[in-house]
Image (tube, rainbow, N blue to C red):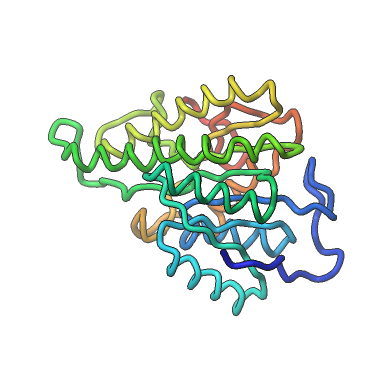
Amino acid sequence: MVQGRPTVAPGSATARPGHPPDRPAVVVVTGANRGIGRELVRRLALRGDTPVMAVRDLALGRAAARELRVHDGVRVDVVRLDVTDAASCSRAADEVHRCHGRVDALVNNAGAPRDVRGTAAAADLDVVRHAWEVDVLGAWRATQAFLPLLRRSAAGRVVNVSAEAGSLANMGGGAPGFRVSKAALNALTRMLAAELGREGIAVNSVCPGWVATDARGAGGRSAEDAAAGVLRAVDLPPGGTTGDFLRDGRRLPW
């Protein structure tokens, strides 16, 4: 893990609900070496929080962290985490525990490539299985691994990066692995929110919109705009919404 607190001007850290300025929020972001995850980590570090860049490829994560240090003057932690491997999730949680003692927010951002040209009628089920393994079981594994640390927070948050394509109300054809896995991720959000709400842990799904990233293809919103929407869910106040499906702070139909 790359150690070090974010480099910010004195007094520039902003108080978040449940996280006073002298106790920056510890935020674990999976799949964070590029795209939305990287931009989210950058924003968290710039404002004085303690983001943990959780990545499958440690070399790529360290390279991304070096870029942030050079271009933005911030230092972020990097930990290896493969969401398809339960042991890897456990080791990552142990490492974060040793370094920080708690997690204030977990952002399940890691996702499988979108099967844009697929159809349900002729789906490659190996592709669908991979999407399920990463998007659904991956988020599930990571949440289970970090839950003990989230329970140590004053205001624990789980943010599942989903997509409106997984909305049953708006469900259409195409991209079957992506759509079905995001619908299942939304179901997981609802269950976890119902179970963890009594402990003060909020769980929400967030649609970042169609984003121009390596994993999602060209066009659409910028990673900056998408990350801002995810950050809203990280910053929810105690007693704020839980079990919701949001985009830019507005509710989407399930």
